[in-house]
Image (cartoon, rainbow, N blue to C red; front, top):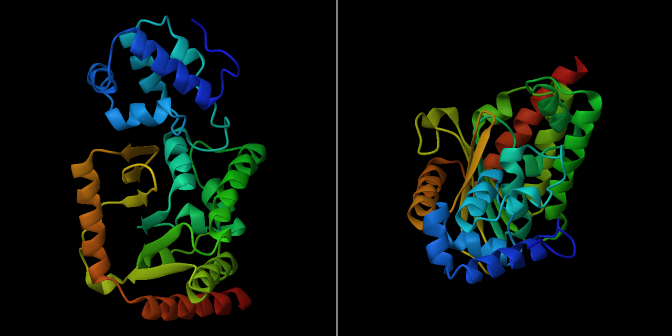
Length: 275
């Protein structure tokens, strides 16, 4: 069997997976056990809502004995426009109705300004050509379009004070970036909370996390480290991330005090830039 119509289409890909699964006499639950994937993830792939990872595709091929069809026709995410480990999380971000994100060291991508994002992308390893960087930059800035609608998704942002103090791109870029965040907060488009250095240890100190809720599927968590990232779907794991986020939020400054601190630091950067 070959995947008909548009082989890069998630709808035809998911429909083909469902047809082969049923032909093999497997339920989604049985396939999930044999392919070492969650049942909900298989359901989302079949419905065209998710793109499987390369490892997912290979395991599906092995269980269903397809001869490599699912790996060969893996839907494209737009090669070179996003880090491979973030591809699934990017798609989920577009579908989310609520996003709660914690930034431990950098401004979360959805809030980054052009100069700040360019500086972040220039700092990565291995080094990127200007063309490679600009391709990634376009995708990074397009993420901010989620905020063009006033009410959806609902976005909460929790920032470590280190994010505000680290001069990414220089004083001018930082001033612009922090004022952008403050403007979004003042307009009530997002809620912003800062975890000050004075808090010391807190529940999210280990790293970045983004929590996402949806209308038609269970919530997920996305965690990220150096050149790695993973979408977490198991309910107990997602709930543990949500509880950790809530605990850290309890240690953070209020929305109003956070905005005041952000604007104060932005003024310091503006002064440095003038010097």
